[in-house]
Length: 273
Ligand code: IPD
Ligand code: CA
Ligand code: CA
Image (cartoon, rainbow, N blue to C red; front, side, top):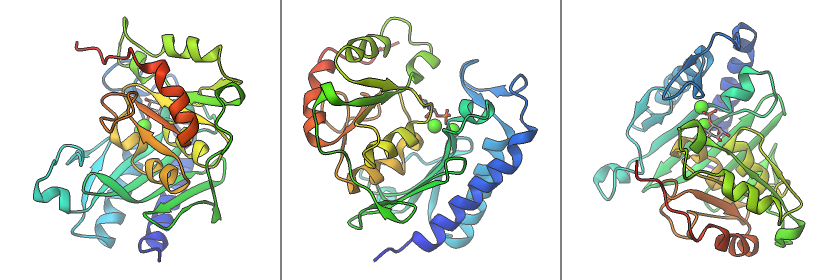
């Protein structure tokens, strides 16, 4: 029985429409930046997050909120406190802001509902692609209402992989993802870099990508897609196969391919600086 679907999907879709309506006002040459000059933020990111805060607070007044642009309590940092028992919305108002700014289609609104450090409901809406992914714990995962499942074949040589480079965006010069990108490019059928981690993970969940990995993501990047993936039969771990993600990286795949990919990251150590 879906508990949040009616409200959550409606609110996320309206947020996607809001982002689309604001897109024509964005000048790619005049956008703000955050931690680095590569880390863009637009007035759309901020407006969409404020819309989501307002709508979700009205519908669920006692729930917490943790968003990329307006902050809040990070549910991965509440530990075993009583806060962990409460519900928190984990929100990326526009995942793939660079794609959004460039009027490329691969961006989405991502809203996850977390309790005890993991999602219990999640919705990812890609307005231009007209795809809305939804999952609730124990209820499976869908795209536009149709059940989705990860690709079962599992062989790396036959696989199409996806990744991103937030590590380079954050200035990681010595340790970063280029080494793994180069190594895995030689072993698989192809690698895609679409620019939205949430969509990449949802594509793995729907069997249209075979696996995704990335260094240096944040909870809001995968706050909803994590549940879409696991409800579709996939697994998400850090790059050493444990649950220290996203700090120690993220590897999202069907179980068999996940096991085949892990050895490629055995030397990975997050830079200390
Ligand atoms: C980014 C996208 C990108 C990934 C970055 C994320 P943003 O999210 O998901 O694909 O490589 O790590 O930060 O900044 O557009 O919300
Ligand atoms: Ca993001
Ligand atoms: Ca974002």
